[in-house]
Length: 247
Image 1 (spheres, helix red, strand yellow):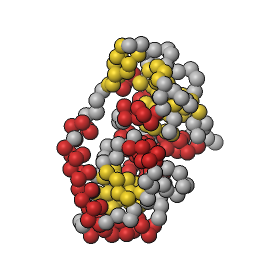
Image 2 (cartoon, helix red, strand yellow; image 1 turned 180 degrees about the horizontal axis):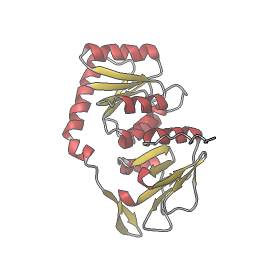
Image 3 (cartoon, helix red, strand yellow; image 1 turned 135 degrees about the vertical axis):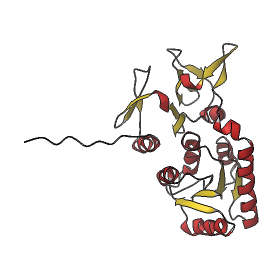
Image 4 (cartoon, helix red, strand yellow; image 1 turned 120 degrees about the vertical axis):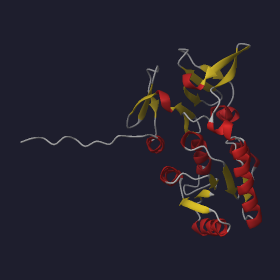
């Protein structure tokens, strides 16, 4: 099995790599941050990923990688973490991991969870490769069908989530946080750019230095430098050179 490791502690990462390779697996790369993970995913797509929740920056970048996986390369992933706080585990659970391993892990448990995660994913492969085309949203007492093709973007405010679609000028507004409904947005065309913004790559019109233009929407979305880099790494981009001026 080809496995990607996202772990900023190189000693721990190489111990993990050794345990996996000794069991016959291949480690495609060791990533220390989301950008390294994106490059590794594109260069050598793995069959499974093992993610530390807290990476180089000290933030929860492992969760960011998990958010990106459905749009980049649908594979199972396992969290390897020293965090056991209930709030952290709840947030991690919203990304739908296939297993958790608490540091320090036991080698036997690691290998068992890797195999179980892969087997469970393969059993669900029709659902993984042929994603559902829609979900239902309760609106004024009526359950309305929302096709993923019609979804433009999802944005979280302090106490609500706005869902923008091609079918309505105004967004659907739900009184919740995005973590509570994140499982509805695990679709190959959707990309989580932050903990408060999910966009549909099919409806991106143009990407600027600090903003993102979405079809049907007149107001551009703000885009941080990090989120712009994440987005650009998920797109196929034709790179051109400026034509030479003739004398």
